Each structure stands twice: as structure tokens, then as C-alpha cells.
Amino acid sequence: MNRTQIVQDFEWLHAHPELSYEEFETTRYIRAALTEAGVEILPYPLETGLVAQVRGPQPGPVVALRADIDALPVQEACELPYQSLTPGKMHACGHDMHTAVLLHTARLLNARKGQLRGTVRLIFQPAEESGVGARKILETPALEGVQAIFALHTSPLFPVGTYGIRPGAVTASVDKFSITIRGTGAHAAYPEKSVDPVVTGAALVSALQTVVSRNVAPEHAALVSITHFEAGKTWNVIPETAFLEGTIRTLDKADRELIPRRMRQLAESVCAGFGAQAQFDCDFCSPATDNDPAWCEVAAQVGRAQGLNVVTDPTSMLGEDFALYQETVPGVYIHAGIGLTAPNHNPSFCVDEACLAPAAEYSAALAAAALDKLAQA
Ligand SMILES: [Zn+2]
Ligand SMILES: [Zn+2]
Image (cartoon, rainbow, N blue to C red; front, top):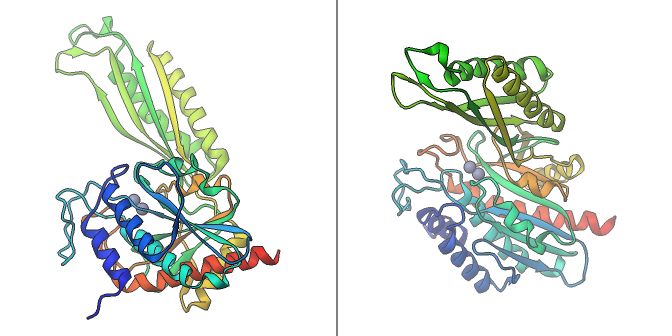
């Protein structure tokens, strides 16, 4: 079978996975492919990732398409002729699909640029898996003048040809908290001389479960997961400190403020009740995606016109730094079916190559339709 250009790109990218902020070969590949296609690359000082654009004959509105390009520290379990050549690294989230699709979208748009009613900016973003690679792009003028932004993401829940679109939040805000409990250490045989951070921490873990169950409205999705609890080094010493950390995830903006506030109150008051001190810290990483309803309608119409089966996307408590772009520009985060396979980040995650060419056609049509809508407004 004659492998098309997009399949060649995809297989090369799949075989050469690179982790967040290390996407040097990937960036070189993208740059070479765009240069060969005659696509304009913008001179932004990005170490990895790049931004390109395709301009129509007249000045007009600007829209953006975004692909993330990084891979994960996962050992691939799929046996493919083009499987990962790097032990312990794999495109287990399908960002190779996103990159190949955006590259090919650039070629399609470039071939049709005579009909474009404005400019399409193509964002190849590094380090999505690190949680905040979008910030590197936001430090450049990539979004200057951009009035709408779109991204595709692989979905192993949908067959090829099915796309999920949903207004509002599709993925959750991702925040990281830590709590250090400071007590008083003692010999394990003299508990009365200690302020035991292990017992205090155990009570605090239980108390923190009530934030979602008692403070958040039951119809809102939210979670607090305590994933790391560390204290002490041996069996006969009550330690002086305990350390807890984990993640807070919400779909609702008000819940995102409420939950850490309640957690801090509980940490301080539970610890005070035991005679210990609490230090609560929260790192606000990325907000929930916030799909614009009017642009969702455009994205769905274009999908149906392309013969895709457009369904309502389910929400999840996963994170996505595309939400950082949506803080300043309205846009849509779309799930593209890649065939039913293992979940994202699983060693057996595998993209059906049949999804590739239609996804590039869809992206090119969506960008052109968005420009038409803005040019008419
Ligand atoms: Zn991922
Ligand atoms: Zn991903």
C-alpha cells in the first residue's frame, strides 16, 4: 500500500517520542516538513515547539489551531512496525496524531490559501503533559489578533469518524496542594511527650474527604485526591513532621476557589486541635476547559458536513492546558475518535491510522469556516 504523507509523518513521530520540553527532534521534523511545504514559520524564540501561519490573499481575521507534540515516560506494549524506538518513552496520549494532523492541515490550507478569508495560525505546542507548556506559547505573540482557537484530542472512547463536542467544561481544572504538619517528635514509648503528626495527619485525611461531600453542591463534579502521605523513618520514633500532597479538580470556577479555602481551614483547625501546626500550599496549574457554545455549533456543523458522527462529549476530571488559551480567546477542545483502544497514557494505547486524513480535512475545513464566519460578522 502506498503510504500517504500524513501516515508517514504519524509513523515517524510515533517512532520518535520525546518528553515535555525535550521535543528537539520533533520540532526539527515539523520545521523541515513545513519548510518543504512552503508554509511560513514565525520567528518566535521557542526552544521546542513552533508557530506557523497560512495567510489568505487579503488581510482578515485570524484563527488558531493547536497541536501538542510531547510524549510520555511509558514503555510501549503495542507491537507496531513503527513502534517507539526509545525504550521507556511512548506517544501514549496520541500527541503524534495531533502533530501529524496539524502538519497535514498546514499543507491543505497552504494549497487552498487563495480561498482563505484571513490567517490561520498553527500552534505546535510543547510540554502539554507537564501541565503548563501552553504558557511557553502564551509568552510569544502567537495569539495576537486571534479571535477563535481550536484543538483536536484523541479519544479512545469513540470509533474513527465519531467526534465529541460539548459546550462549557470538558476537562477539569488541575491544581496541586501540599500540607506539611509540624508536631513534636518523641520516643514511641512516650506518646504523651509528642504531638504526633501521623495521628494528626490521619484525622486530617478523613476530614478532607468532607470538602467534596459536604461543601460542594452534589450536582457539581469535583474531587480531592490525597496521593502522597509521608511521615517518619522507623518503627520506634514518633516523627516531628508529616507531609501530604495531592490534587484538586473541578469543573466549576467557584468550586475551584471554595475547595482550597475549605481545605486550608480544615488543615489549620484539625492540626490546632491536636496541638500541631499546618502549612497549606496550593499551586493553581490549569483551569477547566471552557468551550464556547457558538463556536461549538460551528465545529459541529463542519463535522456533520464532513460526514462525521458528532456526539456530545462526556466530561472527565483529566486536565488539559488548552484551557489556558481559552482564558483569553474563545475556542473549542474537540475529541476525535481514534478507534476503541486502551485509555490515554496506557502502554497499549494505539491510534487507528484511518482517523488521520479525515482529521486533517476536518481541521482545514473548520479553520476556513471560522474565518468565513468572522469575515461575515
Ligand atoms: Zn496526556
Ligand atoms: Zn493528551
